Length: 180
Image (cartoon, rainbow, N blue to C red; front, side, top):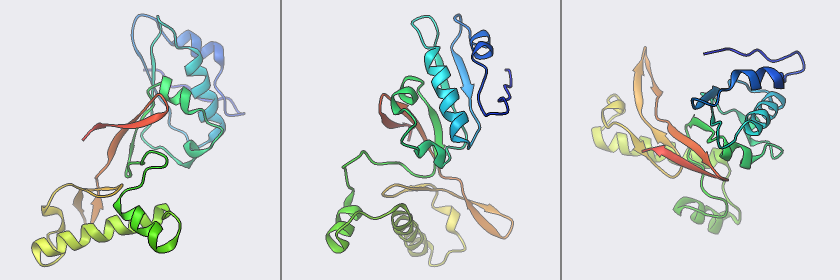
C-alpha cells in the first residue's frame, strides 16, 4: 500500500499515479476526501489509467456530498466500479416507492431526503416498540430495511448507534447494492 498526498492545489501528480499503478494486479485505490476538486481530479486520472491490461477500482469509506456534484462524471465512477458504504439506498431516477407516491399525491411533489429519513426512522421505532413494548430492547430485533434506509442498532455507552449500512457500487451509470 502506498499513501499519496495531494499537491497544494488538491490534485495528484499524473506521472506519480501512472508509476504506482501496475498491469499485473488489480489496482485498488482508496480515496478519502471531501474536496470536490481532488475527487474529480483523482477519479479522472484513475479512469484514464483503465485499459485491457490495467484494472483500477476506486473505494471510499465516506461518500460525502461532494460526490453529488453534477460535474462529477457518473460514467467515470461506473468505469472505476466506485464502491462505498451509505446509510441510504438511492432509488433509480424517476422511480418512486410507496411512501413517495403517497407523499406526491398528498403534497404535489416528491419528499426530500429528510422526509424519507424521518418516515423510515418512525416506522423502525414503531416496529421495535410494538415488538418489545418499549425501546429498552431496541437492538434485539436486528437489522431492518425500509424505503431507503437500513437500521441495525448497537448499544454504545448510554445510548444506541445505527450500524446499518448498504455496500453500494457504481455500475455503468447505475448504483447497485453489492451485499444484502
